[in-house]
Image 1 (cartoon, rainbow, N blue to C red):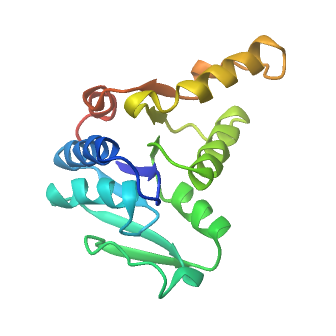
Image 2 (cartoon, rainbow, N blue to C red):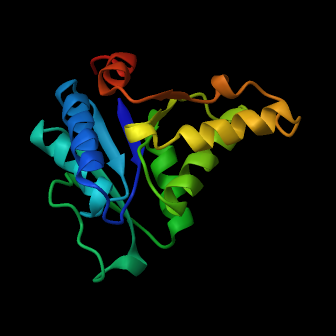
Image 3 (spheres, helix red, strand yellow):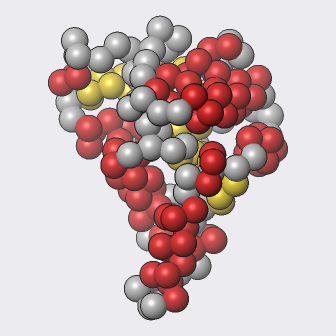
Length: 177
């Protein structure tokens, strides 16, 4: 299974990096392929390091305008070049069978909400998981619950994604490839 992981490219606390690297290693050991933003920074690096530790396939999707300013992860077994961030997001979604959002910033939220909107409109059937390291996604899930309670969301939020802080649950959910 090709699993797309969205996550931080900015420096974060080491506890996030350790958890994300462990998740990547476990998914890679189960025969899965990583699809990700392609760069060797922060949690993007951590997830790719984990997959690389397991000897797994790693597909990096990189926009050309970052060329020279960011370092591609050396574990990439394939690199797909795109023009813009929107093209990268489209390519990552097209190339993937499942999605995981690890902690991240506005880029991660943009990617996550694109796949959630696609699921909500029936254009995507793939599973989406929020890896809730250190309770990172608690505020977002509470906000979505508030939106539902006030009538701004008509669908069941639980149908869109699964949220857990346990890597073993995610690995079990995706099984062996």
